[in-house]
Length: 114
Image 1 (cartoon, rainbow, N blue to C red):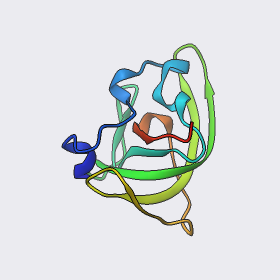
Image 2: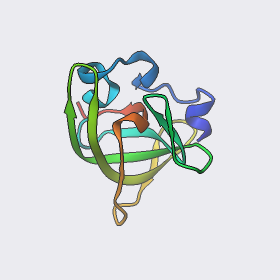
Image 3: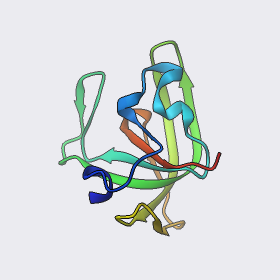
């Protein structure tokens, strides 16, 4: 995902700008948004999850099922995998495939429906 890793696409918001709980980047995700998330391996509260090399994937969000506390975010984000080109444009969305990932995997909101 050179479009994100090398700064070719400026995300609407990055996980580096966000806090925890309702300040977490996942609290801003709406159905229809295009997000970048980390797959393969990632961290949850400093604990490594997954055994594959980390990679950045893109998804069009279909359902946001999250609960927030003052310092935590729990739940799932559902969507369809998509391909984003180096200019940040969505090339394709695979609506036949459903995926799910957690809020801690979200790296950026690339486009927003709001």
